[in-house]
Image (spheres, rainbow over the protein chains, first blue to last red):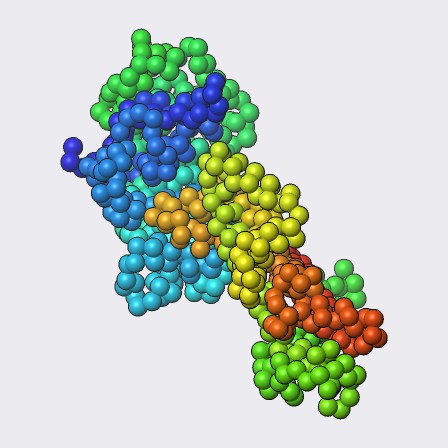
Length: 301
Length: 293
């Protein structure tokens, strides 16, 4: 497949808590993302989604496994060093918490221009300020916010600034670690629409991490489901929602609230029992492009 | 509902204020003005001086203030009025220079300690604590003795080198809370190196907390200089500073020449009080503006 932008092969990451304890945040995770695709990763808190994002961004070193980005092995120090400028400009990250994601003592204009200044890219629109203004208009902010500090903005505006900063580098891969989780629902919808619109316009590949299934359903092309560091199911979004195979995915889908109180009341959510479906085995293709973690027929339970 | 029961609800224009708010209210205007006068007087000492401050004339020894010698003359017959402006220059220079030296050392050590792995951080902090436990004056005297004969630069270096410890501890604590912030991670992911992160992200965030300490350091450096000069350990007697003027004045107490001790003392204390006032104001106003989310 020459279309792969990102390929993750048997990736593991272990946090050392102290001499006697370690936490396996990622355990033998493999997947690949095609160029121009919106790939969603869902899972409960603490299942390793953010660790995955940080490994992909080289902020954490994987304990085992490899990550290939545009054919460059980014888990290999030598290759990272040789391609550093490319890696730093073409991959961009958006954080969940827009409060700590932006320096409270920098003006919006400087925040957006920071990556450009770091890489000494000549601003195509004359000055860094003009460039920041252009990027801001792109994400739906007007020039009056250029001289504001992040604490003066609302959560949605701050997240727009973070998006503008990421997009100012024209990235080919955008990694967003729960970018809408800290926003309220109406602002979430605005930001999701913005993402959709920007992705259609720029055509970047998007690794979108979320814990909210409805958000993923709305935005993504393909979805991966994670639990305790394991990838249990990868499928195109429509297929995952219509035909979930893994018991955990089923439990997750059944936990989605239905916006009708009568139906919601009469419903009994499926509870995932880790003992009934041990998280071992390998991903197997059950139908085209639909992979499920299978061992001893657990997927059909 | 009757018409007279009708009330306007919702947004309403606020009534015009009765008094125009005084812009300078709550600001240390007097301190700023006095400090400004003293600093500029010292900077342009040549324009103010009525006599050569180094010229000794024993004929005028211990002359009380009069029309010619505005602040009187000292034991060696030098004009105190000229000496105040001329000597203040060196006193202030030592204050600011040693503040700058201590701030640079504190930022470097504090940031390094805050970002370093646990063992290195512990080593650096224990070292500063050991140094902190030694009385400051003792350390200053020891270093000055090693450096030999004091001059303005060596005295500033000695005072600066001994006064960075507490600032470094504050910087370290601030850096430790900041380094996990996502904006620092983001900057590193975008390719920001150590210097970039320190200059653009760390420094602007910890600066407000050390601002007050830096201003206070100017003050304590000036005190240290006058203490040393007073004890005869600082600058030689022929270099005029407020401290050396005070050190000469110890004989004046016996002879009743009050102007020799009162006038340099008054200038020194006024400057120190003004600096303290400004420092206090800075601390309050910087804390106010922060984190009102």
